[in-house]
Length: 558
Image (cartoon, rainbow, N blue to C red; front, top):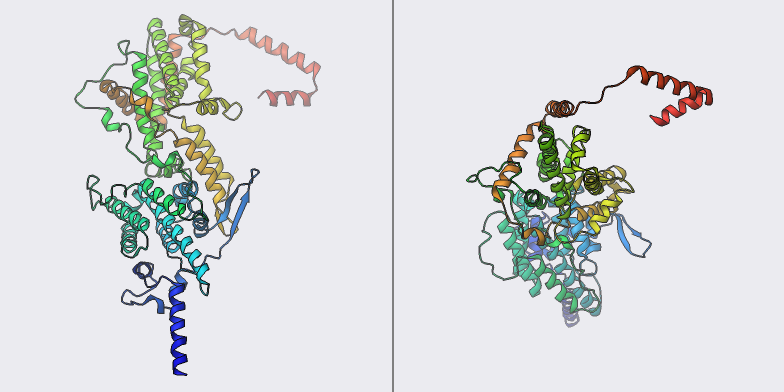
C-alpha cells in the first residue's frame, strides 16, 4: 500500500509538471505583487487560492459585426475582450494602432496596462493531455510576444503616458525586468529589454543618446520582426499584419517651429521685393511643422472645442490661430492700400501665393488665402479686380474653392487628397466636422461594453488626417528663409489679439469694410425707382398667386 501510495504521488507530481501552470516563474509572482493579488513576502504562488482569480477569463459581452465583404470586426466588447481578439492569432497591428489612439476615450492607462499584463500571464488549461498542453504552450508563446509587442508600440508612439504617470512607468519597469529574468524564449527577452530601455528613457533615467544593449531593441519594428519569427515557427498561426503608415509617425520631424525663426535676422517686409513663390514655400514649411506636431490624442472627444482645448489639443489650436491670422493678414494688406494700382498688385500677389500653395499641396495655407480673398471687404472691390482681368481672378478663386466646397459632401477636396502625392498639409476643418458628427451620432458604450465600431470610425478619420505627417520628400528640398519665417511669426503674434478677443475681431472686420467702401464707394441708389419697381412686382404677384402661395414663395425665397 505504501509503495502504491508513493507511485500515485509520483504520478501526481509528473502530471503537475506536464500541466506547467507557470506560477513557479518569477514573472508570475512579480505580476501578482504588482496587481495586488499576493503578499510580496509570499514566495510560493502555486499554493495561493487567489492565483486563478487574477487570470480568470473575462465574461463580459463580445459582439462581432460582419460586413458586406465578409470581414468580421469587433462591435461591442470590453478592453480585455478586445485585446484577446487582437492577439488571438498572432497580432492584428491595425487593431492595436486603433486601440492605442482611442483608449483614453474609454479607459485609463493603468487599467490598459493591467489588462495587457493579465493577457501575458494567461495560465495553461487544467486537466489536459500532453498533446493539448503542447499546443497550448505554442499558442501562449505567440500571445506573450504579441502582448510585449503592443507594449513596445505603446512606449514608442505615446511615451508621454508613462512620463506623466510614475506608477504606470513603475509597473512597466517591474514587469519588463520580471520578463527578462523569467522568460522562456529569446524573442520575449529581447522585446522586454527594449521596453525597459524605452520606459527608462520616457521617465528621464537615461538619455536618448545612451547606447542600447541590443541594437534593435528600442524600436517597435524589431518587436514585429520577433513576433513574425515566432509565428512563422508554428504553421497554425498567421504572421502579424504589416503596420500602417501611422507606425513611423513618432519619428523625427522635418523642422520644429523654433528652428524656422532666428532672433539674429531682420524681419522681411511684405512688399514687392519678396517673390510670391518664396513666401508660399516658407508658408509650407511653417504649416507642415505645425501639422507634424499633431498627436492622435488631440482628435479625441472633440477636445479642440472644449474650454481646456489649449491643454488637450494645443497643436490643432495653434493651426487654427495660424489660419485665422493669415486670413486677417490677407485682408489687411489689400484693404489698407489707398492707391488702386498698389491694391491690384497686392491682390495679384496673394492670388499667386494661393496658387503656389495649392500646387505645393499646402491646402491649409491655400484655404486661408482663399478665405481672405473671399471676405466681403475684398470681394466687393470690383474695380481693383478689373485691373487684373476677370479671367485670372475667377480661375484662381475657382481652383482654390475646391478645398472648401461642400458640394457632394466635399467631393472635390476628397479627390484632391486621393490624388495627393508625397508632402501635403491637409485642410483640417473638413475632418474635424466629421469627427464631431461621429462623436454626436454614436454612443460610446452599448450593451454594457465599449462601442469599438465608433472607435474604428474615429480611427479611420484620424488616420486620414495624419497620414501625410511622415511624407516630407518635397518639403525637404525647400530652403529655410529665416527673415520670411520671422515675418510669418510676427504676423501670427500681431493678429493673435484679434483672434482671441471677439470685440477686437468685430472692430477689425468693420475697419476693413470701411477701408473697402472708402477706396471704392458703392454706387448711389435711386430710392424712388426701386420703390416703384417693388410695388409693381408685388402687384403682379398678388394677381397671379393666392395669399397662401405668396407666403410660401416668400418663405422659400428667404
